[in-house]
Image (cartoon, rainbow, N blue to C red):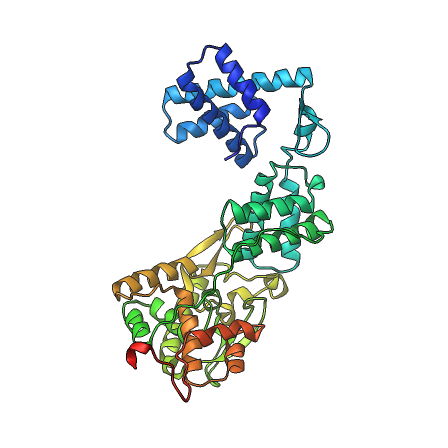
Length: 432
């Protein structure tokens, strides 16, 4: 939560005494002021404008604060307004950690900027590069946290020093993981280079979050079968595809009818992680189930066409390039959503694929029902796919290609998930 500036804090306490506010209520008054400053920072209101106060009181009302608490908070913020108005008139100065003192007005000019255009630019830069929607959400999220940390500092005044302070804050105060800190660094690097058009420079002396060694959770074949038996259609087939083909859940949900080559038993994964395509062998034991699912897709597709819907969702301007593709069978999702989605811009209904969250919830329920003691998720089946292939003496390069990893070092993690077989097998001293 935002701290009250020391100078403002002294003035605030002085006014509380002058207004004969009981000493026992001073802590509450300071608390309401901090809540107000935090509210303005989070929801991008100007803390110095009285128009922000009604929004703050409304938020307290929604949080079920009592009428007495709302009045006390209103009074606390009103006192803050008096201080700021007095400082503005007198032109008082506020000392900063380094450099000459600056006036209150000068300090305020560097804060409370409108970042709307910045976020629009960030979205444009990500869309131009065809990055995934998840990348857009992640980078926008870190940009918003950075904005809050800098108190909405004007973008043109941002510097690598601000980034260094933010990364240090994440590591030392927030105690984020190494992967989160690295993601924040990459997001701000992109933000500076492509949005602010500034040289990022070299960031040195930042405490790095300690990276913990990670070994994936792997299920046995018996555990996988017990989870699948606890699932209903189409979720059982989805899990079989996750495990049988080593797919990410997003790749599985994005499969279309044309992805399947039943003649050659090949599945083509389009636009995987990093916008890469790859092929994997189709499990022969799933052919009949997959063909049955295809018949279900055809039935849903015929019904949608009869009702005059606009077709499946197409991305990257494919719909403009191929006008009728959205209504053609090859472009239909292999795991279609149960309901249609209305597109306001087109004023038409389209069919999307089954949402990831529905699959994840179904898997969690099945894991619980099967009483699996391991922490299993949708991605665990991909880990199990790689580990079981490695256990079956498949070479690491082949597994790398099947998983779609750019670097074999990523695939090497699975060497820690299987039992090492050597001439002299390692044993525990208890077994000697």
